[in-house]
Length: 213
Ligand code: AMP
Image (cartoon, rainbow, N blue to C red; front, side):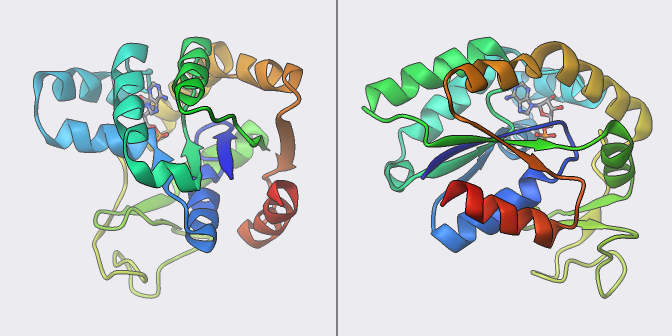
């Protein structure tokens, strides 16, 4: 199972990817999470990425592609994978094709999570993320049992600096401008399945499992 999860920020790709990856025993490869690790390293590349991420812009293709290439050198991706948040540009989609070609592999499916902008704004503004295991909660729709503490690992919950309304608007603009065209790109290749992601996580997961087989 070699999957790409496509869709606007805050649509629930990460939540669904984590769940499916665990159920199928395949790696969940989230470029946003990987870039936040690079930022923590405080390298020059990390500092440049941080400034762009805080503004809601994309980091340069070459940096993300390098990170994904490195990840694909690990043998666990041979079992399959879920790419979450990559590709986000046409150049990244072409780079992914080249990476897979080298491994004589192809994508099994691209799942497009679709939801109106109002839904993603509401989801992102209440999102809280675990510092330790990166699980997501929501202050209203999925609150943790103890405020500020992750139910899964006991880690502290925090609000991502880019999960605020202003930055989110920019992230949505960037999505429309640079990422949306990938829907058409993968549709033409016969790989795209659209899922209505405006429903509960359980309903979305059910449809996802059916879609990916
Ligand atoms: P995410 O956690 O997927 O919402 O990503 C957070 C931020 O990381 C994005 O707003 C971008 O600044 C950056 N980012 C993540 N994935 C990519 C990518 N594939 N290409 C460029 N920038 C990315």
